Image (cartoon, rainbow, N blue to C red; front, side, top):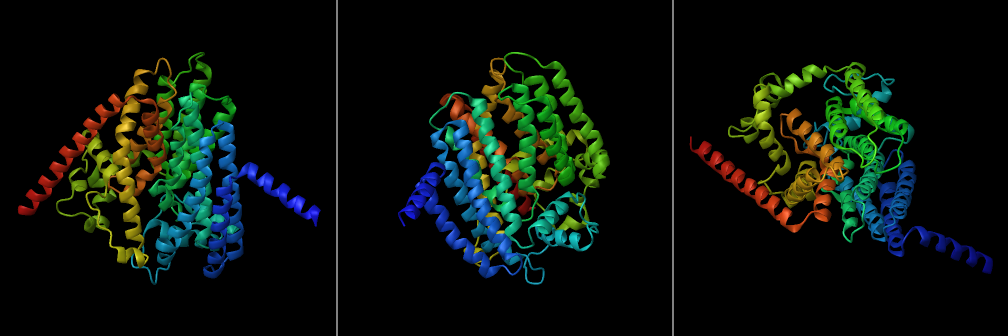
Length: 494
């Protein structure tokens, strides 16, 4: 009996070395609630889902602790708490706003792409892995979820758990690169970990979507290249080529047009991001040539018309945005319709206001009926979390702009902070310029990078610089709001 108690004490001591007491309590509570819930509600692959939930929960905590130890910052113990909170919110949102909408016969708003992916991925397996879906251009996302179903099982919990662990890995990588970029430790460095709880990332993680997967792939590809160029970490050229190549290839399969910001950001990093010692001219040339080759070969392998996609992005009249399919989605006084470009020049001129729309949409609309949330309305839950993300965007942009200004001014002394900014702005420009219909969900692909830029502003920039960028940003918002109200009012009077 004494030997048994001794072994128990040893086990608790070892667990205590990895997890804090609070994390153990929170994990136990989470498992105690979620495991019976999954058993009670899932009819297919319920045991697989429970086992996966346990592995993901504990494995995520281990990864958080390893990141904390690697960066030698005790404040990063919050990573483990944020991870467990994220898991709890994931299960809550799954049952509150996603699972009730997965049956085409009972869903009030069927047709959302992730809803169709959920069924089409299983149909891909049933069809011997031969896609027969005319409406989807990039079938890579179906193969991704079909592979998950094939290996683990088919129910809504399983892809959500895979998505959250992918997002966790990408977020921990963001934290690691952020700490490398900043260098000297500060008391607020741990706030970068809030990237785990960004509302839109929480929402799109629960569903069979491609937004958070692409966010992770884009982040890993561009930040890995940046780490190599800035020499902030010991990473070889071969390892860089492998990581960037695999990530960019996956981007091509899931949404080929987003390969453009990857290649563009690498090209600009070659010019602007240089280590304080050494130039690596040959290595840089090899990496940019490899990226260019991927840009040429990617569309051929994935089977999409890259040049045609660019032309459609420059001309709304040839784009699906103005087709009969979306005719009912535009109001007569739609700001989005007003900013539809016709030609390259208008595409360039309309890009800044379209970026502003992408940041703040769906504001000023803030009404979300509580009754609809309680009824499990996917659209209203999505609206709620999108509004929360828009408010975060509004607060974050002044810090991101301040960090951009300072990083550009100090690039000769230390170009490493430009890694975040180049990655974010090229990604966001591709989103706002390449998707003519303002779908806020697309901006989720850039949300972690925006948080990284804002974090740099908060921990590195002076209050005076942040105040200046805040005046410019909130002044722009005020002018835009006045134009919005004036345009809507005048149009309604005619």
